[in-house]
Structure formats: C-alpha cells, structure tokens
Image 1 (tube, rainbow, N blue to C red):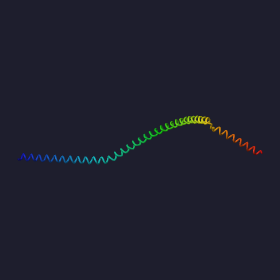
Image 2 (image 1 turned 60 degrees about the horizontal axis):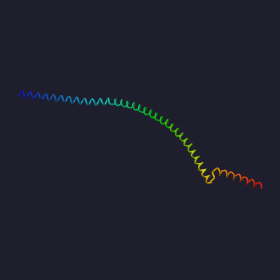
Image 3 (image 1 turned 180 degrees about the horizontal axis):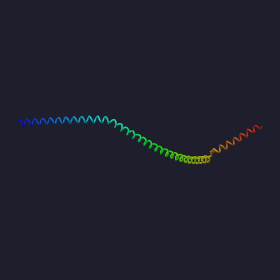
Length: 146
C-alpha cells in the first residue's frame, strides 16, 4: 500500500503544482492585459494627437489642391464664355444683316404688288401730302393778298 499511497501523493502534488502553475500563468496573463490597457491609455492620447496632426496636414493639402483645380476650371470657363460671347455677337450681327435684307426685299415686293393693284405707296402719300401743304400755303397767301 505504501507504493499506492506514494503514487497518489505524487499525483496530488503534481496536480497541485500544475494547478498553481496555471494560476500563476493566468495571473500573468491578466496582469499583461492590464498593462497593455494602461500603456494603450497612456500612449493612445499621444498617438491620437499625432493622427490629428497628420489629418490636418492632409486636409490642408486637399483644400489647396481643390482650390487650385477650382481656379483652373473657372479660368477655362471664363475663356470659353468669352469665346462663346464673341461667336454669339458675330452670328447675331450676321443674322441682323440678313434680316434687314429680307425685310427690304419683302417691303419692295409688297410695294410693287400694291402698286400693281393701284394702292399708293408710302412715298406717293408723302409726296401728295407735301403738295397739299404747298397748295394750302398758296391758298392762304392768296387769301391774305385779297
């Protein structure tokens, strides 16, 4: 029986040492986790500040780049706008000239058609008005002299 008792005692001692080793390692793991948490808390603020500084730098560069691109686009828009305005003015002038030609041709044809029908033109009416004015003036003159 002594062999069995010694064996059992050795097994119990072995289990106790394994259990105490597990407890020691568990405690070390727990302490390592706490240490990591504390260190992250201490260094995390500094790291956060570094990230903020880096972000501000990137933001400044981005704003500068966007501003440059907007200015370049506005410059191109202004040059295209000027070109379009010049082209519109040129075309507008040509259209006005063509419209004047069409209007004159229309007026000439309408006047010719009215003359064929026997309706006097504007110039004919103005000429008759001028003659009436002369005759009226002569009649007034004759009436005064009597």
